[in-house]
Length: 225
Image 1 (cartoon, rainbow, N blue to C red):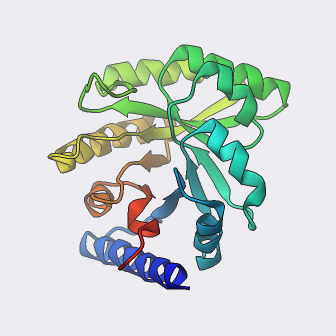
Image 2: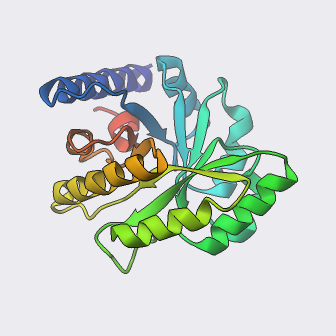
Image 3: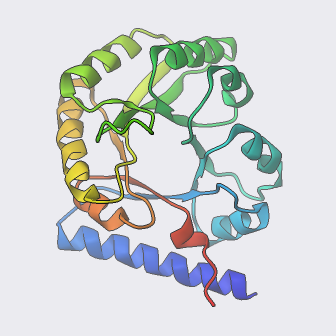
């Protein structure tokens, strides 16, 4: 029972922090809390769902496929990890959105597999806002992102909803600010409506700069002593 009460406390703290941040910066739009389930046992995911969480973030194809049937409640599922083209077929009809699109090759495969299932897949473009060599994502230059989204919009079976990023842990706030500037331009041109950024250590700063999905793992699932 201690794990359950611990998660309950974590959840309450997170919701309180989100609400306080919105109030402080006069943010009216909804901010969605995503529970990131990487390395989290299905029983703990189910406890999170029982608290009222409705959005799960899955990082690994095989891990998700091994756990999904054990989830006790239906949730919206976003795939947020790096996705190889040969794995798209396994999840195309099992997730609601793919957040990590960073190449035309991947986008084309998503479109191809979505067409097979007669569905339209929502996607986010992953932006490498700090141009880190160790991370995926396209350049954060507006002209690059604009051209990439314009190309993706030609596909019939996918729909670009917005952008996501994982900034460096140091000075993340300045990158959040940059992402928000980029997002505002994309909102005006493409009607983008999702800005996914912010994790357990920096989600309040991300909300300050316009994030409307924050992706939390340890802040929610860690066990208190």
